[in-house]
Image 1: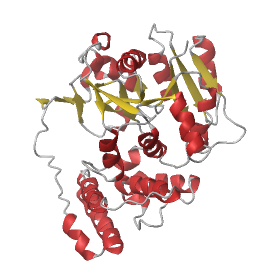
Image 2: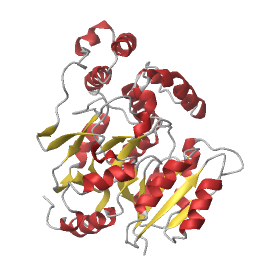
Image 3: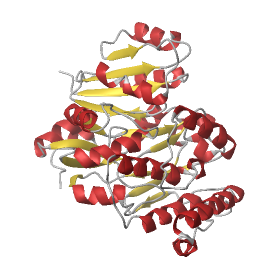
Length: 388
């Protein structure tokens, strides 16, 4: 029986997808599958890897006759899967197939659960690091249920948001039941994905339709960022314009008419358009979220380590906020440039979070990095009994 389908969409980043699959397939478990949707110009590398591996747990969907949009490449993956549960990762990411054990324990403790998530771990590949990087790693390990109303507030009212909603439940670096995924398709657009921000589009729908949510505080996957990653556009201003143009070309009509924020300002604006488009399309009228959104815009500015980028982003957000809510709304928009390269970064443990050098262990990929942190974290096989 296939309990879990691990979906990896990829385009012209064959070596990263191969590395992720190779590390995942080191597992001795036989209750998961990997399905790679190859949207590359050259199908050879991944096809050769699959043939060489000869592992029945690996399935490759060959490129179509013409390159697909990211949206369509993700969409074609789901019908090719067989797992009771489904998760998506990027080709430069990693997920631990021991997620199957977490699913087993969570469904035993909470039979109605149909959405599971876990703690966040981040890794910038060596080719994308300009200097020393300190990353965070949650070290708590409780398995706990979360209230749907609280998650709705976090998602749609931007409650407790950083530069984005703090609601991790969805199919991307989370897992949902196949039955919930089919319900999402049938309830909304007849598609599994319909917005260019595929992860947040799915979170909106998961939070609306899921019955029960379980979070394991321990990380089970790694968000990777390689030089070719879309995430690099958030880190390197020289890439922003080109990546944004490509994204908007593939996703016409992305901007929500009610939100006069150019998507290229930052991640907060982009996610805002996804949420507002979803609400508008499906007749969801909410108020009282606007101040929290403005605060998140300020936090988006504060993520910048470059003063010029900070100033440009601050000014662009201020202009958009004024156009949207008037000058009075700027009272809640007070970003501060906080980057201090002259102050040594903290390394150590604080409030159940470990701050560590991303170069720990001299790892070369997200899969290698996970192997290192996995040895430091609470063992998955001792998960039984951790539900609060």
